[in-house]
Amino acid sequence: MAGRLSFPRAKGGPCAEGRLNQFFSLLEQPYSPPRFRDLSVSKLNLLLSNFRRRAADALAASGTVARVAMNLRPVYSSWGGGNQWLTQTARYLRGSGYSVRFDLKEEVDCILITHFGLTGRTSFSLEELREYVRAHPKVRVIHRVNDNDVRKQTGEMDRRLAQYDELAHHTVFISAWLRDYHAERWFDIHRPNSVIINGAEAGVFHPIGSAQWKTGEPFRLVTHHWSDNWLKGFKVYAEVDRLIAEKELRDVELWVVGRWPKEIQWRAARTFEPLNGAPLAKLLRQCHAYLTGSLWEPGGMHFIEGAQCGLPVAYHEDGGGIVEVASRFGIGFRDDPGAAIRTLRDQYAHLRTAVLADPPSGDAMGLSYRSLIQQVLAGAVPCPASASEKQPEEARPAIVG
Image 1 (tube, rainbow, N blue to C red):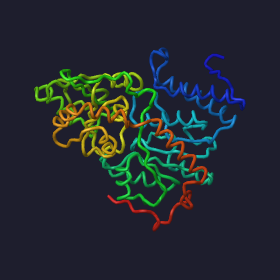
Image 2 (image 1 turned 120 degrees about the vertical axis):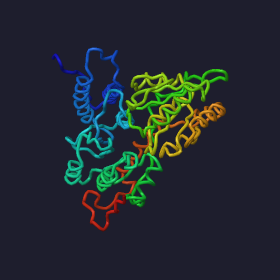
Image 3 (image 1 turned 180 degrees about the vertical axis):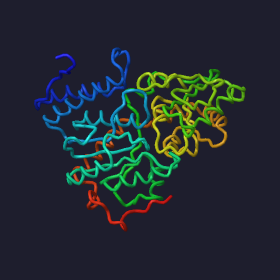
Image 4 (image 1 turned 60 degrees about the horizontal axis):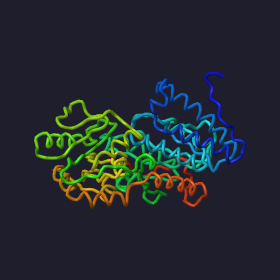
């Protein structure tokens, strides 16, 4: 019938499940205009949403490890790091035999929640989550904390995170820096928690075929951001652009990918439209080092994509969660990014060896979330008593600042 999708129905056999997982793997790939030339992004998203819902129901009927709901919906185009985490984690779980949905319309075993700042762009609200937990006391909630007020420059984000966390059986922070930040304000460090560092898709962001800098060649820096928020490091990038334009930083190139504040007028930088997936990874591999001036970043995905492509990192020392990862294979700076870039170039061979030996890993991230879900559902991770009930006022940690 025109306008309808057909697919092999899962009838309990592993081959049927395998075929459906192959479909899911394909559908979670970033939007590619050549592949879907005649479809708009909105129509494609609707088509994929309908397909995933029907396919998920078929896969669930055949038997799965567990049923997981996530509170965001994937965006199949260039977007922020939270969306990259979402699509990658959903794909990894499905490939491991879990069914994944992005709503609470059916019964699930585990709910994995995270946040897109204060935009409210979630597929179900806090109140809907609270009602679902109350109606399904056996469900387990894992809360991925990926933001804070100092990053957002607001007074609302920390409070919202604390409200969601009242329902959590386990809390995941995307960096130790972020965990410590919230522990100083509202999070009770004695509650079940862990740190899972972000990672990018290993089959896309890899160093094979990456450029290697040689003395006498221009040293090519790159940075990329979907957000045009100044806190992403644009003062640093503008300063490096000035240093290059005024010959204070010689034999250095700066590539800027994505979006930037409209006030910036680039003088020497080479600019590119927003990219994601394979086209972005291909561009990153043409460069020699990654530059991030992002401040108080809870975790970050941009520099991780660069690092997984084999690029040592120049990073701001007030980069928050970036520092604990990038310090393994990078050079930090505070007021003088030019000096850090020169040092990184001088130590390039050593730092490139370091990032190739110990890069971030999307595979490790996916395995960590799968393992955590498995432990929580199996009861290995202690669950707070009455997590589905509102805690007494005196038992709830205070929110400071």
